[in-house]
Length: 333
Image (cartoon, rainbow, N blue to C red; front, side, top):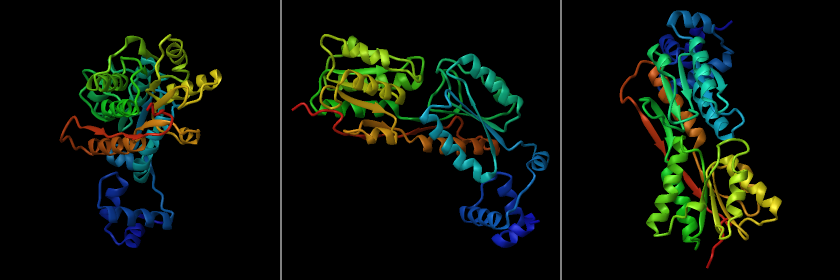
């Protein structure tokens, strides 16, 4: 059976360097690669319970998201795993089911599991009950959404400019009657995307029509009623901006049921990229969030906090989005 000394010898590093790697400390990239290759070649394993007793760590991280089925959430988790798996951390994934009460219960559950840190995508931006966990020494990093009154590290996207770029593209294609299906305004991302929409209209001196602004929950069946509401207007929009993945999918579903052709009968631009959107004819115009990178950066910040680095607190990383423009938005001239 291989030992830590065997790993060190094969990797041509010191035993101390291997120990630091195993215990989750940051080491030089070339050493990390050599150690990981040596571990794989030797089929080296270690006892995480014994390691935890030595270091007072459990080498587990809690990840709390609103919905397990949400593609954006799973892509964020993929990024988290990419970072933490290489350091042999276990990840405990929980879902709050878009419910604040369940969110509070799951945070307490993770605290009782004595996780070394938590990455949380909050249900709402108005409240988050993490004080007890933070006071007990568990670092918490937010993803996707900030929470009012919570001074915590976070990795989010530039939702305002993401939405702005989408509306600006629609305007530049000649549209002036532009609807939006916004999310719940107690959610930070929904607020920002609506702000981007309003800012773009104001900058281009286009009248903001209240009937063109409708709201929907960010849930699996979100957008169905809202899309129908916009399409039933006597003077309906020529283009609609849908502000998250389920709303975009459900809007397309309604369009197909009504026999409407995207990019001809009604223009559509969505938010959150998936391969599915590019399989349609025409492909869907969409604002792309770097969802996997959100998870990567959240995990890196959390590792830093778990290793005792309290510099630049709170650290707010705001990532850029990308706009994919296609013929799903019709050129009007």
